[in-house]
Image (cartoon, rainbow, N blue to C red):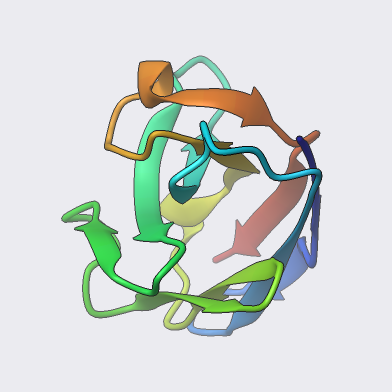
Length: 118
């Protein structure tokens, strides 16, 4: 299973970005995709997740109401609105059994940098 994340960049606070994760080589061990993020000096944290049939796993409280995860064929998107400087991090997409823990995901993409300026 291979994942390719893209769409990161530099945006001002209050702005929007859409991240994309292209997934290939799916196996039966993969139930869905999650987005995680890791800021400098912090642990990697769950952001949002979705099961392949389209059911969302949920969102981190810190992004609820601002971020939306969706799927279109073999791509999973993370629409990020009303961005805040605290959203600055490297964002990773991952595929696996799905859940809110990094240990629920076996396959990881390379990450894409999101920087929100104040």
